[in-house]
Amino acid sequence: MNVTVFMATSLDGFIADENGGVDWLKDLPISEDDTEDYGFATLMQSVDRLVMGRKTFDQVLQFGSWPYGDTPVTVLTHQPPPRLLPEGSKVFFAEGSPEALVQQLASEGVAHIYLDGGDIVQQFLAAGFLDEIILTQVPVLLGQGISLFKEELSTDIWLVERVTNYPNGFVQTHLIKKGAR
Image (cartoon, rainbow, N blue to C red; front, side):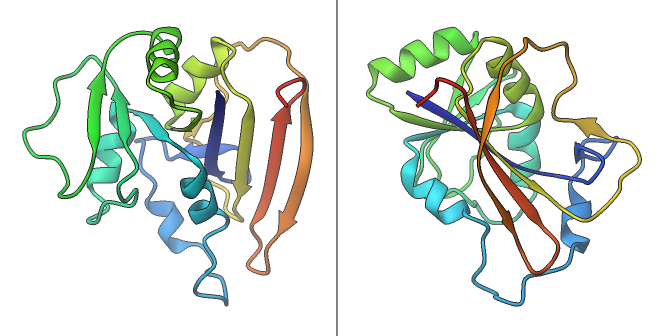
């Protein structure tokens, strides 16, 4: 099973402002190519399941439209599901550890997971389940906020597979955990 993180960070390493908001992403320089999605569509075509935490799920619900199409989404949470889910979405709620979820998803034939949300990334990273990190650094300083890497982590070696510079100042680094492939 391959587990991938695909996230944007500020220049100073934050994935959200101090209140967990991502409105700062709306004010960034846009690409001259209005079809540019920084590899998101390609990623979504390759994943079997998206796994996120409840805070991220609640954030996505505020976007207005469901951005994940018919890709199944598992929300790892101890909270009950909301009464209404986005129309056309395939959302499942689960409790437990990353180990238990990976085991369950593997038994269902899931081969590629996309992780979204800082807390979930931390949990999967601590459990040793991350294989690939795609970080898009955007040209903004937040000064403070929520860091993607905030807990003490094991020492792992990550290999840079490629770096892509975009005309609007975005820099995307694609990293693979040494020994993952």
